[in-house]
Length: 313
Ligand code: TD4
Ligand code: CA
Ligand code: ZN
Image 1 (spheres, rainbow, N blue to C red):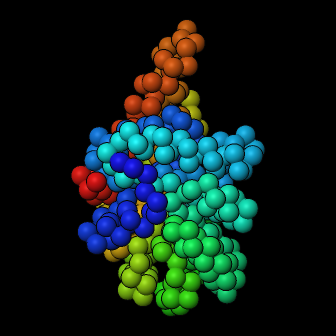
Image 2 (spheres, rainbow, N blue to C red):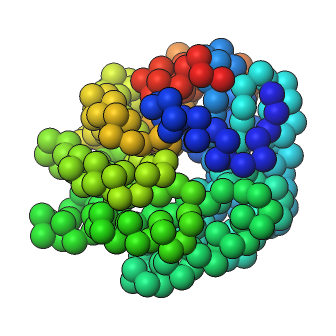
Image 3 (cartoon, rainbow, N blue to C red):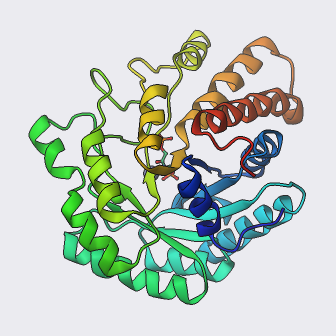
């Protein structure tokens, strides 16, 4: 099915029916193909996302070219599957990149001005919403900051989303989706001790806003994958992600979009290492990639089942 014009189409259904749609990051054709093959096999709606860095990478440094090629790749491949596919700009900070994505035909953009003071974040978000809505696409914004694992408790408290601010922010900006910081962070090292997410805060944000919420930094960092990578020489001590029961609880409390990048990266790296180690004289990149991307596809399928989006297309 077709590339969806606005990510809103996908997330409004998820919100009504109480499940979450995975937003999976890609930087090249093979990752994108693996994600879409997983979606097709699971009959799951899917969001594929590029960071600003991904757009630069795809465009070999040229932003306009990168955004355009990303759209072209996604549209071409979306025509060949039966599930709805949206393309999203993840963590847009640079106005020029956000505009390039909108012009190129993305289904939604994130304006990440969460590092700015509340009023400025609100103003920036409102400006992007006006432009994006004029062309019929959706906008995601962020409140609070994704924590670093070194933050102490006092700092942590101050960087998490304020539910009262969320109410005002959504009303004033008309933003379509909101990413509330509730204790996750990007990457493979999310928690120093036990994983903790602020579910009370999430619940209040949902009550105060009523719109689809987004969980960033949601990779599970499966320990078997970490062990596999380590077995073949990776240095990943202390790698830890969000447990499955916490993801499910977050979905129950109103998360409808879940961002996953690290789980794909770690699966890719673990199996690349394994394939290299086991096939020392193989020099055909296709023979190296094929078994690796089967594993990337499998991890995407697993996530779709956990998020409840399987069978929802
Ligand atoms: O928003 N994301 C994905 C972040 C992608 C970063 O890409 P660059 O390296 O190009 O900047 C997430 O929330 C993913 O969270 P995860 O838990 O998978 O790290
Ligand atoms: Ca941010
Ligand atoms: Zn993120």
